[in-house]
Length: 81
Image (tube, rainbow, N blue to C red; front, side, top):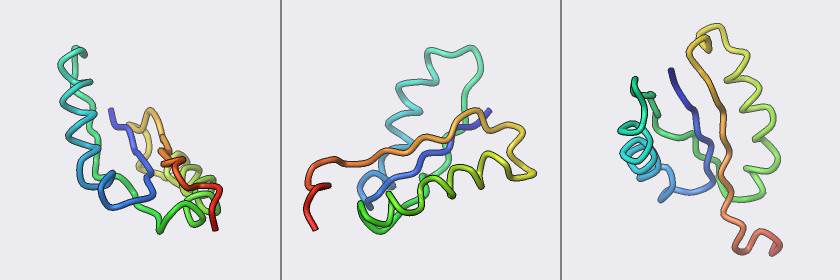
């Protein structure tokens, strides 16, 4: 099983897989694969593309083991242009 994350920045892309995996997998009977998150170029890019990106991953031919597509957006500064 696999969870795909979508993020807006470099920091989230670097640490999220390990952070979530280290917390989640010890609580499960079978580990879940958490690949490196898909990174967007900031908040605006994230908001424009997240729907199609998640849909594409969920509908891909190799998505039979994908149980979730999760987008994480840093809301600090999201209202600023």
